[in-house]
Image (cartoon, rainbow, N blue to C red; front, side, top):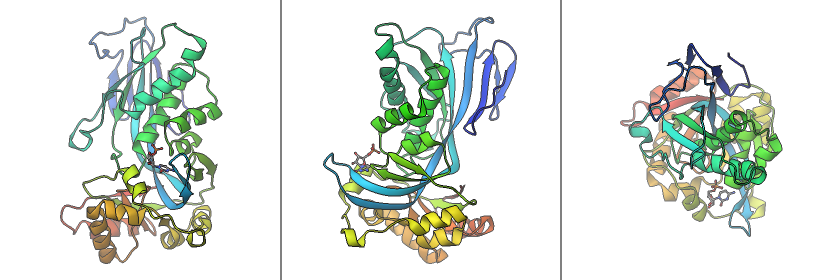
Length: 344
Ligand code: C5P
């Protein structure tokens, strides 16, 4: 049985027999569990896969430091076509941990991806149970799940891959475990896990995010945008970047009006001219390799490089797809510099 859902869903399967295909992998059903056992043929296996998208920030201003140690932000985020995939499988019975995490594509690029309780996916699952099950079922055994991750979004990249995975986990387990949490409740849990998760709860293409980043106002997106993304081998630590930041005085602070105009009207040329990130200078000092790369690519292409979030991913805002391909081929002339076209 296939059940269509939002754009996030790749496939939803409730299966007892047969063969199912999801994003290129053929599942001969029922799949062996990680313990090597196959569920019995009459046992219902739920599994579905959801996309977990990356974001980029096309505007970020820091308005001040807060008493809780965080910074007051005004930022504009775009949901991109770059995404991980999380596949959820129900597990029979219960185990100590609510979630068993597996990586579908282990390799050099995601060798640091933790598969234990450190992963924000596991933290999100645990928080979800604390919020729901443990409040109403006291000591009763809780449900559990296996989550298989197809990882494409790089870590420490300013693309919020971890935050996006955490929100996809909240949405997926809310469905798998039939918890019936409202969007408002998912927002509250998301905000308790980090500052840039709430954007993904809204499931919109563009939004202005304020507060720590958790107060999300969706924005109409009037067209598609193409970015050429590049990053140095070393990622940026978000706390390190915020510590190196010099907060601008109120009269030097920027507002996102022109960026929002570009997004609403779908004008890439205007976005290119007005995109801004206050964290850039701080990140340049934290990551000199990123600073060098930005300078070389700006000189080569004649275009401004924009850092996403706290970096280390930077993008050039292209004028259209052809322009993006041209920019990418220019960047490919720099030795050991990979780039990627990201579409919004
Ligand atoms: O909330 P999140 O885990 O994304 O934040 C990581 C770190 O980034 C925080 O510990 C803090 O140092 C910094 N941060 C901040 N102000 C924000 C968001 C993040 O200072 N609004």
